[in-house]
Image (cartoon, rainbow, N blue to C red; front, side):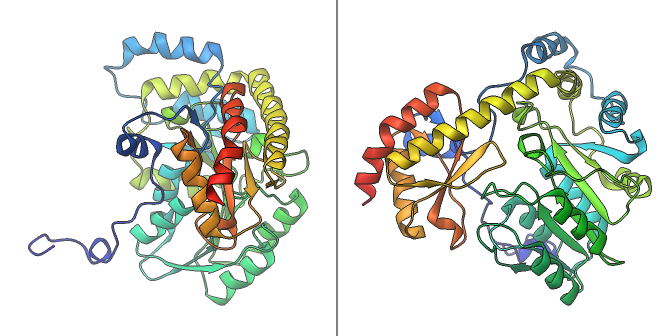
Length: 367
């Protein structure tokens, strides 16, 4: 890019993106998907009262949202039994990752993560000039002991760990995660991604110690609450850490409509539990659909299921492409050996009906 005064970091980055969005695929195909089962959104949508709130709030769209997110932070603090000073709100977890990485990372410092874990986080690290170091999954789970050992060995500033995990849907119990939190040494911060916390079985999510400055816990309204398009996430951490976000975050990044929608969604806990139950039933149905075509559904504590093809990544890509050709949008992990799987979001019954119809055809064609 001769003549364009790029920073050294930007000039050294590739034009890759973490994933190809379904909208881009639809534009390339010239038609829409009939089942959108690849982005881990909630096809069930938000609670009806949230939809009504969004409609009413449309009259206020001319105003900026509250840059302090005062009411939402207060509600989240009550919900999690922490102080508002322990909560920061941002444009989804991805937006918060971008800010949090810049808070802690100087160019060249190491960030430890699992090979094949959430790719958007890796892009945030690259944009900040960080050095990504990885350790493989073990038995389709992130390995906290190996991850911590890697982080200590490389003197990593940040350790990234998701529980439950994306893209495999696997999880660890709260005791193992607590042990990881306790083991984080001075000078290192654990980014604990809990985007799928609502779907996890009892005993998975550790009790929140809000003033532990060695861990930041990231949550979202994009999954169980059905607000992926509203872009609302939050992080919980020590007040002294949360305060630093104000130095560099996008103060007007979360719209007034999104804040009001999230407030009501937080109140609709009965609806969230209904969605969690529907997703659990959907995971069982996905397992049956997979089995009927010779695939194996891996155990999942999320709103998606990794379907093990029993073969390699090349075959899984062919199978994914055959499903895309039949108007079913799914994704797959990007790194071997995880890429032997397809990742399928639990969707409404009509979407799963279509998957059940076309999967046997896709398997035959891919073979």
